[in-house]
Length: 587
Image 1 (tube, helix red, strand yellow):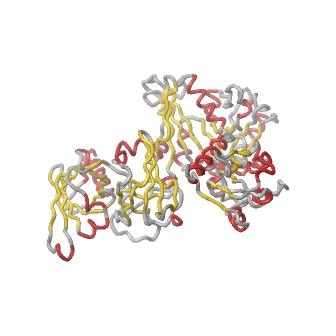
Image 2: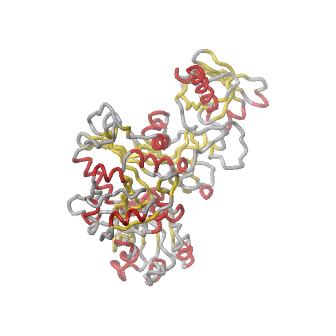
Image 3: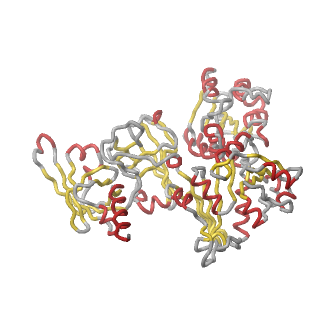
């Protein structure tokens, strides 16, 4: 086994251990550490640790204690950069000091920690002490695991998961908003497991009054994993007879309200129940302020279990990081739609990351692309590099690709968007090995269905363009990186006005799928495999484009032939114009 493969194997084990601590370690992230003697063959694990409940002791402390004197000269694997400063609430040594005092010889780190207790200082101090430090091993997986911690530090809010159940035809309740039974026991057990890895469950007063839920964890042996229950009750309508309040001495309840006086008068002083006054936003609780208040309490991961209205409000406000969609087997025929406009818009830019059957029910988990959370990324269709796939893993619903390019990894952020032959993909890892720079991306089921990414393999060449930044020159036309369809090259005709000096110019005729005919216009713009081109002519379902020698040389179009299929993105202005024409016609 190579050194890099061994590092990945041990880091994967550490990440699996860290996941077991989710929901128990707030206000700290769930971190795992392994102490390994790599001088033996096979290597021997000397100690391991995961952040203790409530955040102390840290994983490194526990792993080093277990290893004892044997840790001297060993390798420490840790899923997050070790802290370098002591907390004012904890007077023991920082993890960096512990690592140095135990004589560790090498440290392998998955991801850096942006918090003020680390902020790259841990890594710098370890290197300054002449330790060998390897960074970025399974960085994308570690970033996903620590997303709540990073969001709390950088955005003053926790990671937010939204869970909704819908009937087979997409309804969440009856037309008059009465609850209906949707999912079975297997799905309910799945939800309890989701609750267990969160620090808080958020619901609305309408759900509390209509369903009288407990919102705790009732899986065998996991009652202690029940998170804080948070109720949004703008006008103080909750009644003292609700089960969630009767159970508050076992699992605490926080009620956020705009009318603190009315709520106190209604409930009085109840053990385990805390009342929190909140500012208003258009007559309702300010969701940003609520999430900020939870972050201030150390909450890093929260799940919204509420009706469609509140769930949609969180998504519309840009606070959805993951969506769990449970679909029951039976239709309702009519009722309250489960998916509102805010969540539907969020789903447009989300990836299906997990799908499973739960007896007769169906679960789908969607992960939002970070770049799209903060506004849709834009490109120009001007290719800046030709990348080559040097690793292709996975099949079916999820594939991962390593793409070699000339882009400097130091200038690429994890979560950044890069258009790969016209597909906007999120960078999940980056690095340099064997003299080649590279970055990695993942493609989920929807992308694989709509594009040619399912046929990509080692050696496939891709047109690359990084997302625009404010102030960048617009060289082509505005491109979103969302593929509309695959167009087929019907013919390629080489035109050679001055081949000796300039090279050949090529005219391509392409066939476009029927629903997209109306968006293609002569002298209009189109994006093909990520390249911004001008349409020369249009006839029925076919159109032509002319590629100059330079474009043929600096993109993958130089090797394109009749029969090839390419990614097509129509001009967004053409789409809006067509929609406006339809509206005027209907009016």
